[in-house]
Image (cartoon, rainbow over the protein chains, first blue to last red):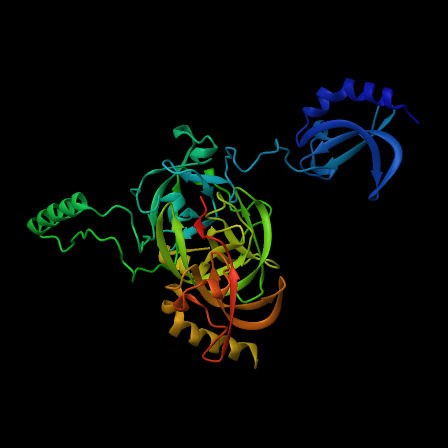
Length: 333
Length: 88
């Protein structure tokens, strides 16, 4: 049997030629694995992206069973890439990583959805992540990672495509100036023949929402991948039920699991000092933190989408039912 | 209670009637159809869940802010959830 040092020497001699072969992504020294069991024979371990029968490879790409009398062992490891955190730049970007409108902090890229009319692949997240709480214009820059994670204009991944408007029950700052501005705007609107009128109103108690949702169109289709980090590719949807086990993959807390504890919930949610009321919501125990907004909620035991995470506290997380999100945005998942 | 589907429908109906009045009470941030919790464990019993930013003994609340323990024959479970905020 060869000593570790002599095997390392053989590996060093042949390293370059092995790395040049197609499919090879690494070379090292290790105990040979045979029939799934580790033996005590040292070998030159060749890491390949994919194991292929030697017969289907050109002779130059084959790994010989022995090198200078030392056995080789071919191990399949897939494509190797540097470990990336969710707040870094990813291209292509998978759902589960940081994203955001250029004027916000950051939220989560929830899922890849398809436009019902054109079939185009779009990025799903919240209005407050992609459309800055109604304060964005269609076409605005969406950055990956989001601004608080260092996203700059060079990290442009998509443009805002459309969003479901948020209706706030209370908004700060209605004052004489606002009233005057609204009055002037209405005068102009009347003169222009518009039916729309601005109101300087502080309280709109009737305003309710079903979803906090938006979609963005990637600059290039290849900038995004369908596979949600640590979950996989979503297959269809499923309505939530009480006590259903669920999971999500988000920018801040990664993969977390929980259980639906309340359905059909009416909740009052704070948005930087403004309040918005939502009906028909889903509630789970704590499974998120700021930055997870926009994460897709998936059933615990299947790949079916259940909801869209948008709010929470230290004790609870709140989700829009997925079907309402898809219908409002006119997309499919 | 009876069959869970029936119990759920009953709670849903009571919820529709009382949501607006419950949402006006102090500390209430949400109302929904859920499962009752006792000592951190769910009992399986379906209840009208009232979510509050913090739990306060009824004695310290104005009478109109006290949450009843039964509404139209349906059990009410008060659950503390803190302040709910958009999470970006």
